[in-house]
Amino acid sequence: MLLVEILVYAALAASLIIPLLASMGREMSRAILVVSWAGVLSFTLASLTLLFAGKPVEFYSGLVSHDSFTALILVGASLSAILVLAAVSLDAYRWPSHPAFYSLTLLILFGVFYLAGARNILMVAASWLLVSVASYVTIALPGDRDSRFAALRYVYVGAAATLLIALWLSAHVYAGGGDLSSTYFTVLPREPLVSLALTAALAAFGFKLGIFPFHWWLPSVYGRADGRPVAVVAGIAKLGFIGLTVRLLVESFSGSYEAALILAVLSALTMTYGNVAALTTTDLQRLLAYSSIAHVGYMLAAMAVALSALDGQLLKLALAGIALQSIAYTTAKTPLFSIVADAGRDFERELKGLLAGDRAASISIAILLASLLGIPPLLGFWGKLYMFIPIAKYSLILLAIALANSGVSSAYYIRALRNITASPGEAPGRLHDTYRLSVILGAFITIVLGLIAPLALILFL
Image 1 (cartoon, helix red, strand yellow):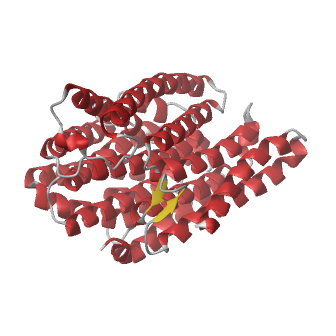
Image 2: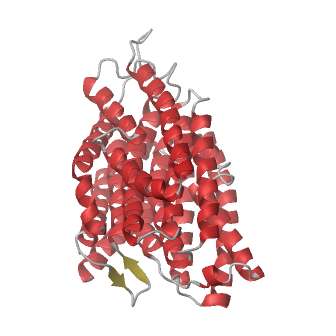
Image 3: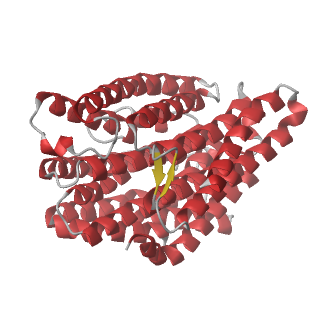
């Protein structure tokens, strides 16, 4: 679709124009922000065009293809970029490499378009490297010690994941060619080369998504770096890897009982670890990092359903749930990570009473946390519902584990909200206007999408 290509490349052009504007001096800061908004809105329009196309759309002779699922993933990435720009505004100009933040945000968006829709291993490799390298640099941009440390660890883990994905891609070419839809992995699961490739792919995606036991780096990066770059990486880049993971599983491993069982076990371990670890901290940013691990665990459970031999309707319902949960995740986590960077981290000290006198912001944060918890009729409720119904058909044990973990998560979400909105013992800090706007906008999007989420099934069923 020519219109979509034009809009996506407009976002790339905006990314490339920003460094040129920055070279003209600080007086171009507002122009850079305007160009950034133009690029993000252009990408958003491209995502919505794909969403309402009504059928899968192919690009570059089938190297890239977007259906309803990946279109929703792109919409979620677009919303995350909007919320990031609304929060940060011109604040990134305080950083040593300030223009790069706006440019890299758009570059990551551009890479996510190809990462989520890749159907060929060369496209996977190129988009994987683009999104990964841009993410590493983004984390380091604020220039403080914690951000540099987090970026260094992120690079180490990312390099390991890239080597593993290269091993998988090489085995893929050797055994089945360059098309991701090859099912030879299912046919020959016990071949040594295939077993090695499967292990490499699992580890690579495990590192990128924070799946247990490959999660160990995530609290040190998401929980230590400046929250604004983390919002970009967790809210935009991660959705691209979720889209690619689901596409790979559905197209290459569908019907594999062994692969479904492995994912089910890993999902139980991942969601349990994330929720239990979140109970142990009063640092809001680390809490958000741990709960990100837990949310990936819920999605893994739905992915296990996608691999099992269930009927097509349940598969489509599971995909709808993963897509909606991804959007609920990013519309909540993006503004929450951002406000931590602005107001402080510890919700029993720095953040205590922050929003006691700000009714709109406190209600908005309550809505975002309630969506993550899965309270109806917010978007997070529909995401979990559409995932949990197929999970119930696949395994009641896995469903019980997921429901128990959702109950555990209520404890730390409620504790954080109670402290942030409590009466402060002393004069609390103040949430700046742009970050306040991002929180309110995120809550508004969560409510609106929650009201129309049942209609999303029309795209799948």
